[in-house]
Image 1 (cartoon, rainbow, N blue to C red):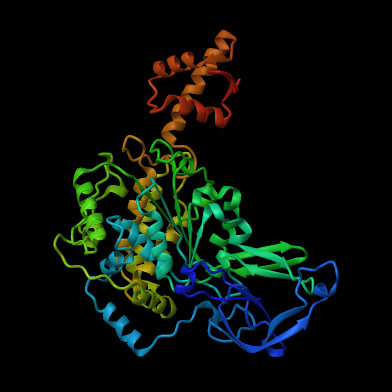
Image 2 (cartoon, one colour):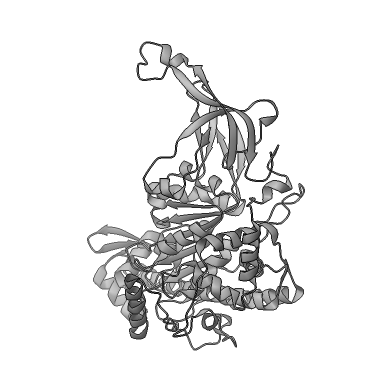
Length: 548
């Protein structure tokens, strides 16, 4: 069954893409898998259907239109007997001589990273580091051991999650990335099901056989899958776990057991529960999302809407200039994060900060690359450039990783794992792929480390702006955990001495004051203890201690 590809004009008219059955005979069998883009040449045939002939099925057609295929050309290069061979690893794009000259011109630009980052989504102002992370996800790293049957393939596609308050342009950045990607699929989390994301099993009306239909991740194979409203997906997150790490979708339904490739970068945008991001909670608590899924994201960016007079003035100028139809040539104000004074590897200042290098200076006339041309450039880089890490770059990444592990040893939980090291390698490969280089340099590694630091600063800083390494992305913040332990042990000793394990809210508040707990919102603190099973709510403002 083939579904037509819509052009932009047809999509705007709101047409539903139509499907038609195709019959493949002899050597054309197995020439494609679900999710491939194919061009079918053939003759239209008519077959009489049994359903239409029976009297009670009066709404069925008497005849079925189908195409008898003479040739099938697969967009992945040639007819494939199985999708494990080398030709299928890259999605093929055609480049004219004019395109190649344009790609050469782009590559010759002196500050290429800055040009591409600012061309990504010019309508959204600021957020340079977030755009840099999205640009790296667009180019992607290199997949390893794909053809080696004895070793497990290592994914090369980075995944990015952007969390933040509403109205900061997350969805627009997501759509811009999906438009630029040579193969991009954009879905909205609250209107998609788990089978719509992965793979659907449908029964053929005429023969009664089962047929596979690829979902969004299958269609985005070797491209980008953008998922907006990621927090509103309910229990469909589990469907993504295998696709994000193993890069395949396995299915066992109705006697069909198969595995489809889903080598796609997932870029997700999410709003926190309750509308605004609460710094006192971790990313996992803000999104109500499991740690298994969160740890698969290479970069987690947190966008906060903090009032800043200089920033707000420049932002309003930019919006007004866009509305008036002229290009804005203002620079973005420096967004500094209030951090702790203690020395930390995440706050070690670099000599040439990436944020300064990516910014457009005031009054500069910036000419962005058109999206159509940028798509060709990205396609060329993904298809032909496969960089290797240089020893200097590997050393820089290893030093940073070991430093992070050292700072994290004191904690109960260890959010820094080898997954973070693999993320750094993937992003460094993407950084050199962006400039069409076959070797990753030390500078590439330093740029990637700055982006990773920015992502981690948002994750690990607590509500007081302090860097709290004992917080993981996943559980509750450790500062809260140690306070919860003290609080519960004080309640236990009091309950043992008074032989009464019921406490009202006033008593709990008084005990917290005696212990001098630093809790921004006491009722939500008690609520989290209730969720974790230390306290049980017995009535209005009455709690029972469960640990005795």
